Amino acid sequence: MDADRIRQLLRREENPKLDFKATLHLRTEGEKKELTRDVIAIANSRGGRGYILFGIEDKTKKPLGIEPKYFNEEQIQQIIYNRSDPPVSVTVEFVEYEGVNIAVLTIFKSHHKPHQMLQTGAFYIRRGSTTDIARRSEIAQMMQENGLQTYETVPLLKAKMEDLDKELLQEYFSNLKVCDDTPNIFLIEALGFISEIDNGEYSPTIGGMLVFGKNPSLFLPQCYVKLISSEGITHITGNIYSMMHQSLELIRNIISDDTYPFDAVEESLANAMLHRDYLDVARGILIDITDDFIEISNPGALVAGNITLKYMRDKNPQRRNPWLYQRLLILDYKRHFIKAGTGMLSMKEAFADRGKVKFINLGSRNLFKVVFPR
Image 1 (cartoon, helix red, strand yellow):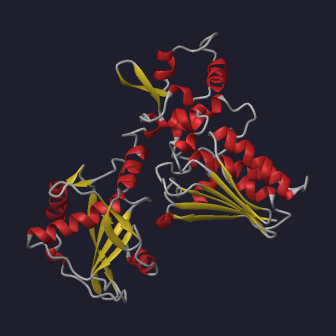
Image 2: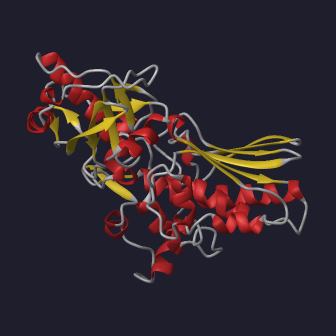
Image 3: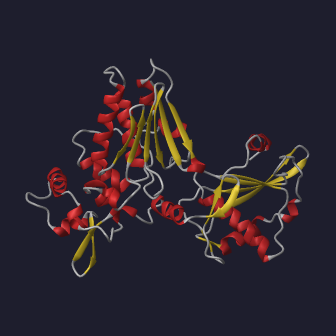
């Protein structure tokens, strides 16, 4: 950290990974908890390293300076260590900037989220420039992203075995080449498609319903695609494969242009199906078709550091739903999903002669959009 880096940070506005504070007081327990809360919130938020700059007026970003003797790195680390679970890794540096000393508290990228405040039991997260208590879905998402929980294997207690498409299940196991006849209940359970709930009774899991369900939206209302065009609004439901087939057929009929790069649109839609945040129960996938563009949006900002350019160039990116991805590939006889997430530069290249493809990552709204020119 040096003066040039401080200058770069001051050009930005406060965000989930950056905070400006004029002073730091650690005299009372309340002040120590406030520091820990802010550190936990930054550690729990998506992205890489985070920073709190002390000695900066937060509204004007005017350098005010601090007294280094009040910033004991060992004391600050001990305060955070004793109040966060698991502890958050931080360092303290001092940088001379425009004639004053600035203290930089660096919060390192965490692979142990979610972090919790021990004294209150609360989980915190940053919403823009504000520290807030994390919602249940956000906590679950952090646990999923760090391998502490697989939401797909959670049973749907109101669903019955009859709600799964047996022919599609048979096709899956046939492709997997693990059995010749109808797969037995123990094999289906071992792969996480069903779960025993009571005395030999089984219910489909969330993942089983998403892949093999006859009508998943009855149990997972967020499992739908909404397509808007000049021809009206179409509400598409079904399992992921069914929604993929229906959506692509509708798009082709509406565009009605054999020279249009449908492969790129197909890849974008497959990404939306695979990488959407299924813990966001308030929204589905939206396809908006106008005379000027096709926009595909899904709940779920990018996982890979929230940096769109990095994700575009990554041919093996971190996936939000690895359990789902691995199982969908077994059924992917039409090769809808094999290319999904293998780098988005190919989409831009496909439209090189038609216009610019836009990738919009809205971390604060947990939304990702791809906009193709018509």
